[in-house]
Image 1 (tube, rainbow, N blue to C red):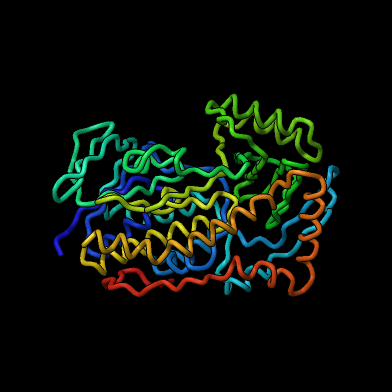
Image 2 (cartoon, one colour):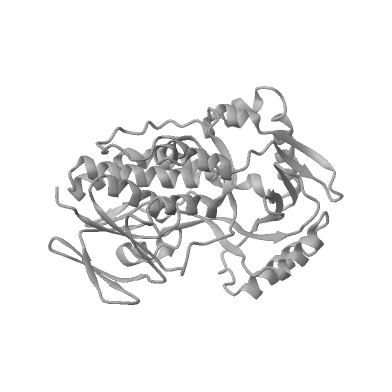
Length: 403
């Protein structure tokens, strides 16, 4: 097989994972990222299952375990900060066979990028503005610099994928909002700290979570109901919206909003899924959130992103670069599996911010039941357990051990 060139848009989670496995299959991947550098901050993710397995095959298991956090408890508090309910998380770790960790999404991105940055061409601060499929390749136009031809192009650029827009159409055709928005930021020196405990406070339609990070940092996560109107894009307007939604909240809301006023970075987006009829068109394919975003609140989106990157690279290797065959096999293998995960995420979204007092009370009752031995295993086992088996692919021997 000739060393086919693959342009990958997005240097977050999906892009570096795909670049790693494509390189080992004999392809020449190039990463392009519109941001000027890797993103920092953001939110934390729960990472387990097949995504953890893939990270292990990349030699990252020890680094992820050491960088991540091993949460001991999810705790729900009232207006005065008193514990209403909660549960220990040991059962989840057992269900995942010990492969369960919480870590900042940006930290996982950094670890993945470090595996490929010296092996592949990388361009930050640039983006794709045009795609034209020609005989034997795709002519790509960039915002900065001359156009180039690639054998294949892959959109790994998230919920708001530019590649998907260029190759498949505008986002509104494929986006399914789940009725919520989310925001997250970090602050230094915040007290109190509850190490290895995720603390949640909620009123109908609004949740505020607090999680202690290393380096005297604290992460705050807001999840709240949102209608169909566009969300504000400017930082000051985003802060104003959060202050309006949480201004009457009790617990630590006033102090957290004061910290928000000083924040220079804020993750702010709608909680949505992407539902698209096909994940490829000609020589252009989509992976991760660009193809099938399950939503921020799904709990497994990052692992699914890595699975899609691994499978696409593997099918291209198996098909000796024949993209039509590889793209079809990639989708046939994952479509139903991802569909079930999306359906589960739709049901799970209301767990974070129940919209009525009744549903909030019921949510807390369910959480209380998780403290009963065996209930968490029974209730969450289907969501945590993987029903997919990763195929074996003809990878050359890896230089890094499976640690």
